[in-house]
Length: 146
Image (tube, rainbow, N blue to C red; front, side):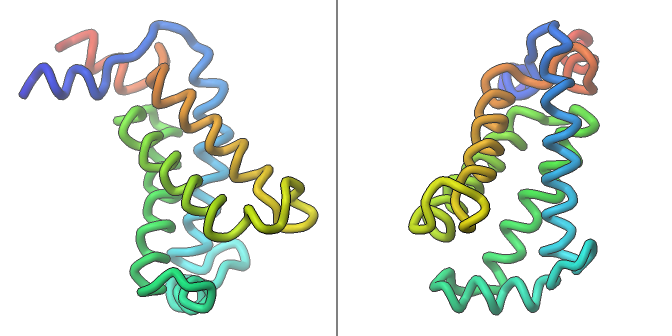
């Protein structure tokens, strides 16, 4: 069990992931808060759930809860550097779903509601899944003590 936890929090000793974690975490937490709480002109769970159901992601409320939680709590995890590998993996999966269920038919560019923004977040999430949180993180502190 201890070995599994160590693998989840193991990270490289670079500061580079910090430069990626903070802005991406802020963006994701803000987007998730729109879905979950209706903050920042969002629609909250009810409105987001209705929209997701309208595009075929059923049950919409549950899908909104899952997507919003992945973004909000995953974003917070990235910001503080806690369990970054699993959080980033969940975020990556969420972005793949967003790309193929919402954006792919609109082409690349965000100006047409395309997938470029979700693709950038996917790339950041995959990078953090591979690298871990880096030196300036709770994961690094925990793994060096384990």
